[in-house]
Image (cartoon, rainbow, N blue to C red; front, side, top):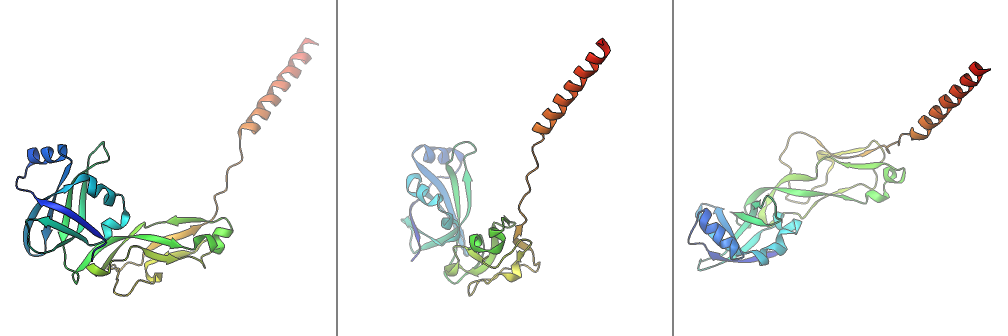
Length: 218
């Protein structure tokens, strides 16, 4: 069973005008495609779906879509969400139809584990996350919520590359390049404030000017 279940209605009319009317009525136009089947235009209740759109795992989980008037079960991954350019509102959602055993490519968030206990952090080092997500290949029913990177042994100057990551069973990173995912940088040294020094120089120059004036008068 999916962690996310949404109710939907079949969308009989398509086009911009129909989409605008749906949004004014509190709905979001969407479509389910792929899997060797025809596209299925649907309508979602905006209030019901909004609670899912704020959850990061919604974008890396199989969504079960119960479409009224449609036979069978529709399962898909969120492939794209079109947002309003000003308001924080979803305008359209694309679902890619998948089966549990289908192998999918999907972006999964990176999670640095126990960094606060590593020697680098204790010495004041800074965690630099180079890749906030990683594209992985796995079965649709085995998508991990996060790719955990254990940082307890990292010191300043250390870096974690793709080949260093212990991936869950059945999960692969389909890249040949051993790129850096995160690193521990040396603490930033703050520059000494120059305002006081400049003030002291200015005061010294003023005092010197006064002395020169007094010498000329005498």
